[in-house]
Amino acid sequence: MTTAPRPIPEATVTRLPGYRAVLVELDADGQQTVSSEQLAEQAGVNAAKVRKDLSYLGSYGTRGVGYDVRFLLFQVSRVLGLTTDWPVVIVGMGNLGRALANYRGFAERGFPVAALVDIDPEKVGGSVAGIPITPLAQLDSVVAAQAISIGIIATPADAAQMVADRLVAAGVSSILNFTPTMVNVPEDVPLRQVDLATELQILSFYQQQHSGPQKAVMGPPADLA
Amino acid sequence: MTTAPRPIPEATVTRLPGYRAVLVELDADGQQTVSSEQLAEQAGVNAAKVRKDLSYLGSYGTRGVGYDVRFLLFQVSRVLGLTTDWPVVIVGMGNLGRALANYRGFAERGFPVAALVDIDPEKVGGSVAGIPITPLAQLDSVVAAQAISIGIIATPADAAQMVADRLVAAGVSSILNFTPTMVNVPEDVPLRQVDLATELQILSFYQQQHSGPQKAVMGPPADLA
DNA sequence: TAGATTGTTAATCGATTAACAATC
DNA sequence: TAGATTGTTAATCGATTAACAATC
Image (cartoon, rainbow over the protein chains, first blue to last red):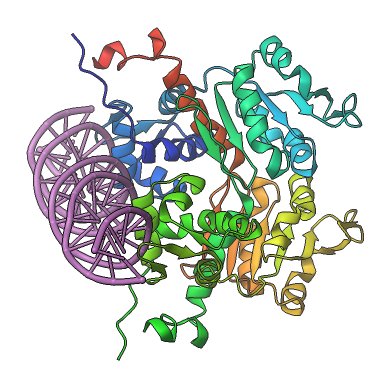
């Protein structure tokens, strides 16, 4: 009789790719063993957090020694579901979509770009990075034929919800949205939102904080003071 | 004598751009007033969180009525430091760098792309989106001349740390790193990391979870069980 | 064995949420 | 006034961290 595995906390999941990247590098450098201390340093977190995070995966370290790089890399990859490839489709062949299509980091990390889709008849028939651009109308058959599991939305903002709906209907199981718009998807479809301008706005906040508050910036307006 | 303003929690700061986007849209639609309920719905959070978040900025709502869209938009923008433009420099004119240079969303939201930089002599002299590409050697003078405050790193991963160091030396006050590498910067330089493949790996985790754990995936290895 | 380092516990901290008095 | 909705309190939850016994 086995114990029910503790669920892995969300915060831990978001850090696993970082640990994995460090492990890949250490392995390439031929390092056999790594301590939580070193892993933490290179991943930009603290050692206690590394040990806690890794403990959710299992007891894969050796006291007094550390973690076997190869073995831990395998375990982290396994937990992240990276032992299989997950083909992706990119919808929207504007500047961003084309850049993503050309980005080699996806395929390198197990996410081959299997199809490109656009609604514009002018673009359909062309190709980016050697991958043909398919009309949006054929999304269903493309997803099925290529066994695509992840849809990436890189369209203009006002098309995002429509595309998300069609991706879900076509059967993708998760969605990455690069549009600066919230899209609604069924509860069981994991969704991540990456908004480039949002990141800049967050920086802007801390920047302003740091440069010290300006006069006009302080306190509530007079009528509410 | 005024009360010391409560610092705004990090989690709140990261949501403010989302609220702002909704407010911009409501304002464009001519809506004058918004409840925490509606704002929450459109921003994809719950109403209690909206009220709590906004309460850190001040008491800008009216009980029984809601928030004045224009006024709240101004306040959120002010807190985020978006009443001024923050010119950015993009370093690295590969696929991603060029896509970012062409992205209109930056300028629209107060982050004009003021300069493009690359180390490759072949690229220097060319231009993207009408902006000339400057050699990396001239980074300092470009940052000074254009009063650039934010540096965006879009180089290959192995150049990221070097570029970060030079951006800091050149005097930018915050950095957005698109490279799948951790970079180290002084404590007082706000840094955000956006790794496209990390997002996919997180999706991969939840995807796999959802499709149900495979046999080989369950439990610790036999020798540790 | 002695030194090193894990895995886990317990304390602390910060974020979320529900509930409701205040008040328009 | 009666209904609506904020702003805040207090309870809950989850994440972080320090510390240390277990153990290689």
